Every structure is written in C-alpha cells, then in structure tokens.
Length: 116
Image (tube, rainbow, N blue to C red):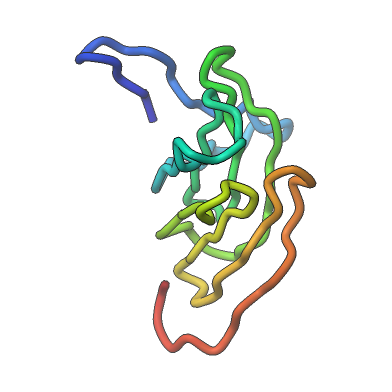
C-alpha cells in the first residue's frame, strides 16, 4: 500500500518483513483521526488481510504499534470523534474497539451474521 501526495509516492506502507520469511499481508483499508481530535497529525491506521491493524507514523514511514484482534481481513476502520478509540470490522464478523493511547483492544462486539 503506497500513500500518494498530489500524485507522487509519499511512503510505501509495507509492514516489516516476517521473521519466518512468510508472505506479507495486503493492506485492506485506512483511517485517520478527526482533525479536531488531540491525536497526532502524523497518525494513520491501516487494516490488513491477516486481521492485524498497524499504527503508522506518516512523517517517519514506520509502524508504531500493531494490534491483532481479528482472525480474518479487516474490512472497515473508523475513529471515535475525539480520536481516542479506533473501531475495526472484519470478515470474521466481529467489531473490535481499541484504545489508541494504550494500543490495546478494549471491546469485542460479536453476533453479526456477515462481515462488518
């Protein structure tokens, strides 16, 4: 997944190589915190085909944290209005709400019959 700025490549959001030499996951969706929030302006959250979510620092082009809360590909990402929480939906039919500051999953919402 490559971010573009006015048509020019800014950063390739490629996760660090896997230690076992396995295939890297594909990026599936992106989210930025609301402009009005207290979150860093360089923060971007990316969802991947392996069910992980990575917090990227856009200025450095590096992964700051990784959350693994889903068993299948991430299909939706959004931030709370204050930027303090991120919610992710997945092909595993769950929604996971995570805390941005603690970089941890807080709640899992189950019961959906199809991907979210």
